[in-house]
Amino acid sequence: MSKNHQFIEFDMQVVERWVKTCAHMVSGKRFNPYKPSETIDWVLRTNPTNFDFSKINKAQYPDAASKITFVYEDEVLELYSDNEARLFRRLNKGLIERGLLKQYLGSPSQVNINNTVSDQELEEIASITTIAAFKKKLYGLSSAVTVGRLITVLKTLDKKASYITAAEEYYKELQ
Image 1: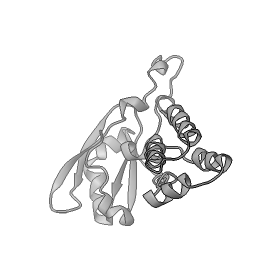
Image 2 (image 1 turned 120 degrees about the vertical axis):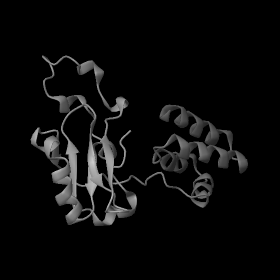
Image 3 (image 1 turned 135 degrees about the vertical axis):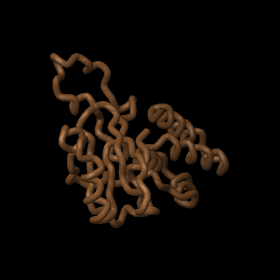
């Protein structure tokens, strides 16, 4: 996976973002955000599960970007100060000039929190009295882990078999 390209502690002070433009791994030097007097290596690497190997034929698919499912966390390097950004350009001048890195003008993808459900909320879902209303809430969840937790709550509360069966069937669909 990618390394030393994003530091979560500094995510509110991002000055610039850089993205690799090729399918293969790209690495270089940057200044350490914790100790600006030190340089560290960074690597941007596409996860093999995000690469479509069925499009390997260059004649049919000349655009490398069409072969990759873009994942911000693997493809983008973040810089956290103007000084670091200026020095980054110097340290990685060859990569930038060859077109292996370009400035990224987008923003990080938002984290989907639809499946962030507390134990109390799961108990409330399990306590719904009609099966139709229960299924409506159940199908609003899209994580097998969350549905698995709901099944445990249903069994703990000794709910009707129809509720547990509905949850287990949906759980199998999600896996």
